[in-house]
Length: 438
Image (tube, rainbow, N blue to C red):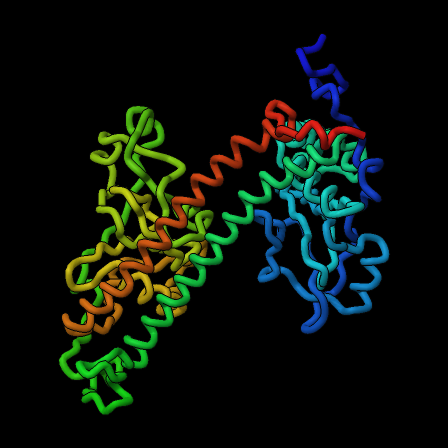
């Protein structure tokens, strides 16, 4: 059985002019990382495991170091080179990473390694392993009950579908990689913009070098300082408890036994998992939503857009700004900005005080900071003139970050829509006729 322009294969319909090879024949080699556990060292090289493959990146922050001797020993089996593709094999299976750096400073453990012949092959494999067909193969070949895994043998037999024409392969890669590059560029721009905003906050409200009426740095040009509970502050400024300055609210969870509290809900209802997965300044959508009945019959509270949602339980001090009216579960303290203290001021104040907030949390099962402890934290209140100037300056930074985040959401949706169609041949790229002449 076949469809026009497609042929039947052992893995289903593929374009008539495409090929299938198993991974060990498509690649130079398919291997996996060490199964041993080299000792942790204070100095040396990183050891990356399956849990360190997250969101197309390597999580070096939570990886540990091993000796150069152990590093060399592991690399006899599974040395990673530029354009190789890694895949997580244990736990969360199928996280993919393409190594595009020339200099490699890590070894791998319990990670699948597809050795690529060249850049084109590595990039094709990277995108193919994200396709529906590849995910289906992983699902069908995983093992384990307590902890799922996929075997090296299954990775070696992984069926790879690809265009026979190298030009078509390159054009498909170009389309997908251009989307990824734009997303990455936007992310870097946002990181830089946030770093600039944080630097301004520290410069103005920690070192008190905001511009005075003559445009000179206030403190270093002789601006008058007075004593306060938090040390010296500019004259005319104040120190108050955060809870006396802004409104703070908690959250709640409607009964999960009542469908009318959840079914077809349209009220954003955030959990800490939404925030920790987001890793961005703004958040536009929650995984779960509740109904008006759910909101009314629980301790969840509705708060306005551009409030500061701070996780207060388990993972304490993580922060996101909601872009729509929203509510949360009980794992939050939400700060609602006002004319006195803006979103722009509160965001960086919480970021700057994160370690202190975490230190004030307690608990045996999981750490939590209660609302009364948080509300008692002291905060510097600048005078209206300085706050107004600061808010005008930071508004453009926050707006640009929000715009770039929105662009990335659109680009990610386009990529998610295109990837399965391009990688299966359901959408074909145009190749100039003269380019196909041999």
